Image (tube, rainbow, N blue to C red; front, side, top):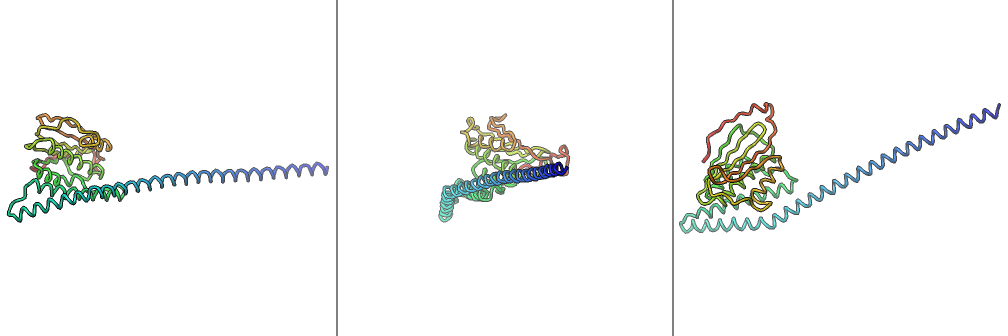
Amino acid sequence: MGTGRARERILAAGWLVSLGVAAVAVLQWRAYVREVEQRAEDAERTRDEVARRRAVEERLRIARELHDSLTHSISVIKMQAGVAAHLARKRGEEPPPALLAIQEASTDAARELRSTLDVLRRDGEPNGNGIDRLEALVDRAESAGVPTTVRVVGDRRTVPAETDQAAYRVVQEALTNVARHGGPAATATVRVTFEARELTLQVDDDGRGAPGWPEPGHGLTGMRERVAALGGTLDAGAGEDGGFSVRVTLPLPAPSGRPAAAAATGEPAARG
């Protein structure tokens, strides 16, 4: 009888020991899994931090290269144009319009370069170039000999920063192409249309047009890449009445507090 009880006690103790060992093993396994997961998260975080650091270093390198290679040259152009204009006035002559256009363009180029460098250093923040600066683009085009009219259709409203900057660059490049390829008597029309879910930009000229598409990465191809990155479309080619036409459509979020179909369209007075 005593032997049977002793055997039962031994078996019970064995079960208790087995349960204890199993519990310890489970706890150790869970701890090991947590440690492995933590190591994986730390490794992923480290990779992300390394990638971000390398991206920052690359932006800073690009900013330094742009600063060293372009800022000095643009400053020299601006200074020489200013000196030439000053000497012309000192002789009692009116500076040539082309010289004044060079001086103004170099000033704008220096400003835009500084803005671009600031964006590179600040991790891609907006650089202040947008639809509100179209008047400055028109003034520059007219100083380069391209009379330009601007028409705005629809209710002006705030658009996303990336879209705003892309719209500015599209019009800038289109007007630059008119000055380069349109011929001496070319005029241009810029039409900006605000719709509920789209921003449309159209630049038409009555010049002789540009022969085909430029090399990849330049001119119209660069515009197409910029527009496609935002989910928009670009059409460019000979205009209906001659010249060249560039039409860009960029998607917009629905106006806040208004149904998409409620956007009004009215056409204010044109600027010529």
